[in-house]
Amino acid sequence: MADRIVLITGGSRGLGGALVQTFLKAGDTVATFSRSSTTLVEKCRAEYPDRYVWESIDGLDFDKAAGFVKNMYRRFGRLDVVVNNLGTMKDGLLPMMQSEQIHEIIALNVECTARIAREAARYMMKQGSGVIINVSSVTGQRGFRGVAVYGATKAAIDGLTRGLARELGARGIRVNSVAPGHLETEAGAHLEPKQLEQIAKRTPLQRLPEMADVTPVVEFLASPASRFITGQTIVIDGGLTC
Image (cartoon, rainbow, N blue to C red; front, top):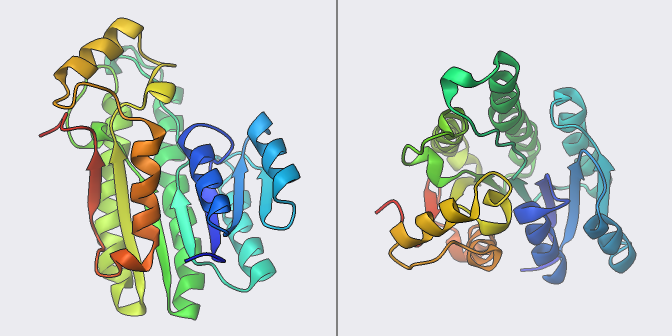
């Protein structure tokens, strides 16, 4: 199903960037924001000038982030899919973390996600349809050393997903989350190669997940093929948490 209006937060790189490209290639119109532009942003602007919208927004500016959702709804007249991908990871043992770091992780990962979901839900309720997909993590499913606060925020996102699914189901809106394992391209910024190798060895499928393992699951949850799935967290980790 193409020609949808898809909003993805944090779509300038990593998983967010991969999702932007996935939906653009499917024929959808994609709106996204991130703190700064990247080569991918410029590439999408050039290739899809009529179906791609990007703005520079800091997710910690909650009003501006929510305003982006409002502006895209007004511009296109509907909002079919929202993917809450924006987030931050600051690894470190909790006793050693600064208060400012804890606050930023919780604010960006949880509060920004909740505010975007709230704004999107209001417009989806008007149209009587819509899909919200929140990007969680295996750290919200199991404890991992050095990412306690990050894991707490991802567990909160899964809780938000379930509660929101209950609230919006009768209005024709589905809400799910995906919980990828340690994506090599993103986890590599926080973990040493030896740590990544150890995680891969502990994984039943003996490797780390790739973007191509995650994007089809998000595509599925955004499609009519998953029309009877809501309130679920789909774990994509090669069996790491089984």
